[in-house]
Image 1 (cartoon, rainbow, N blue to C red):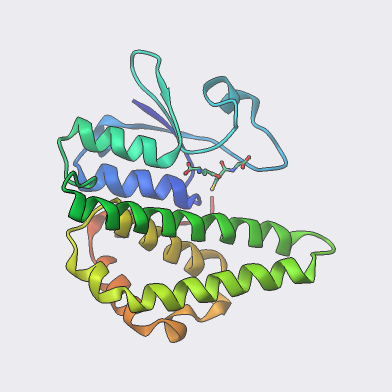
Image 2: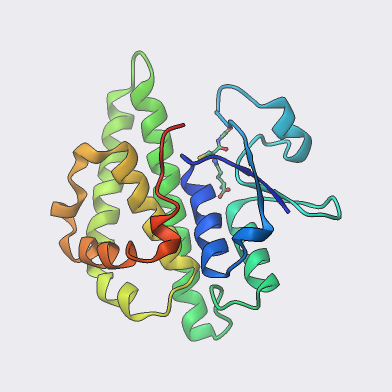
Length: 201
Ligand SMILES: N[C@@H](CCC(=O)N[C@@H](CS)C(=O)NCC(=O)O)C(=O)O
């Protein structure tokens, strides 16, 4: 399998955390691919017309995207438990996944806007408000996040928090969400998260 990959992308990180947790890292060849909203990547678009990473190429030529599809594929391949089947576990897992991905989507748009020459102030304010509200809500869910077996939900929420550390360090999110910060700190002890911390390059 080949993965269009970057060490900076939080969506790629989701896939790599799952690959570590499922002992599949050795099966994946990483292809460093640059994906930027304003610069469609012709080589990447051969495999994914949306020019987004992560994109996974299987040995039979099949291509898979986006991140959650790849994560579920890897989970099935390894007969893992990152996508619970029991409805009592499945719905919270999918909700946390949607929450984490939605937060990531807002953070990426916030960063794009912030980097424009003349950013729209109301848009910046809206993204900040959504981020702060999400952190407050997730802080209330920290105990549940800690109690539930590790699944795609916690992986995604943790990757969103890692992206805040990487790109929005000045937000001081740990002060806003101390219980969430404690849960995050204990999760970061896992090799799957330690080995996938975002880095420039
Ligand atoms: N929903 C997608 C989001 C992937 C995504 O937006 N990745 C960014 C990199 S962090 C990207 O490829 N951006 C390029 C673009 O939007 O053109 C997923 O979960 O895989």
